Length: 150
Image (cartoon, rainbow, N blue to C red):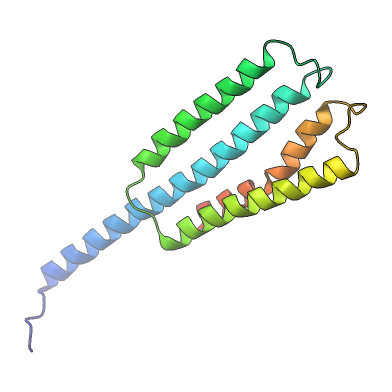
């Protein structure tokens, strides 16, 4: 029942190891924030490409490959960063997935309202798509800020 108490040197070594592991977890949490910012950047880049079109119905031969390239480069970047994460805090991962969920819901609301109000209509300028994309990424930016702030 009686276990020997650690020596002062052993206790200091254990605390140093715990602090070292804590630093690694906080660094991984910051990687989650970078991943959210990457998703926001991908979404905004696609919005920018679509917004520069003079007419959404006549995108031209460059738009499809440009959007595909944005997605491929973004996905590769997300995979590289995601594979580097070894540990993360429970709070950060809950914030991460909560932010992604809120983004999807918010994006559906914003695009739904844009469609219903005819903000997105054939007669409207194409930059409306970019403005909607800028509004839609707000939850991702807020969540990344919250994770970085921790």
